[in-house]
Length: 251
Image (cartoon, rainbow, N blue to C red; front, side, top):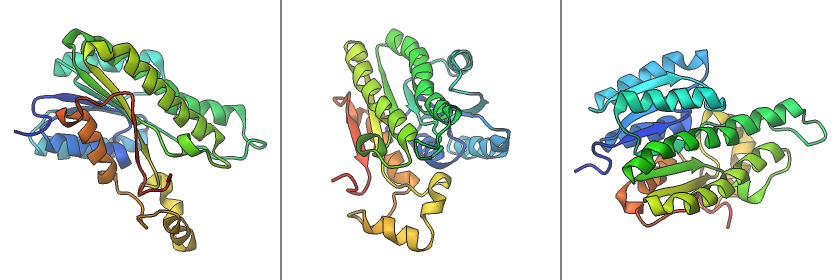
C-alpha cells in the first residue's frame, strides 16, 4: 500500500519548484492534490501539473488564488473540501523573496514578503484545522528556511518571515496536538529552483557549494522526501519540530 493512499493534500504555490516536487511526490504515494498558484503566467504550468498528477492515478485540481488574502484562502479551502471531501495534509509552501539591505528596503517590499510568506500560513492553517479537527487527524507542514534560523544580510524580511513560521509552527502544534493533528516545519538550505537560479551559475555557484558540507544544492525531491515523511504515518509521533534539509549548511 502506498504511504498516502486515499488521502488529500493541499499544497500552496505548487505550479513550480519545491511545491511542484511535493505535489508529485505525494501523488506518487496515492495522495489526491488540491494546489494553488497565483500568477496568470503560471496557468499553463498549473495545467501541465494537473495532467502529471492525474496520470499518476489520483485526483488533482489547481486553484488560481492568493493564499495571502484571508477571504480568498477561506474560499479556496472551502471549495477544496467540497471537491475532495476531506483535507488530510496541508503544505504551506507559497513564498517569495525581495532581498534588500534594510536601509534601502521599502515598506511595500517588507509587506509583500510578510503577506506571501507568513500571512498565507496563518490564512490557510486557520481554515484547514476545521476539517482536520472534525476528522481528529491531520498533518500540517510549513515551509521555512535555514535563513529563518541563521539570518542573512540583505534578507531581513525573508528571514523574519521564515523565523515567524517556526514560532507559528511550534505554537500551533501545542494547540492542536490533542486532536491528533501534527504541525511541523521544513527549513531548506540552497535548493535548485527558479528562485535561486542566480546562485547556481559560475563562481557564485562554487562559492555556495563550498560552504555546504555535502558540497551540492538540494533538489526539489530532497525537500519533497522530507515532506512525505512528515505527512505520512512514518512521522506520526513528530510535531512542533523544524527539520533542516540543508546539506549541513547550518552546522
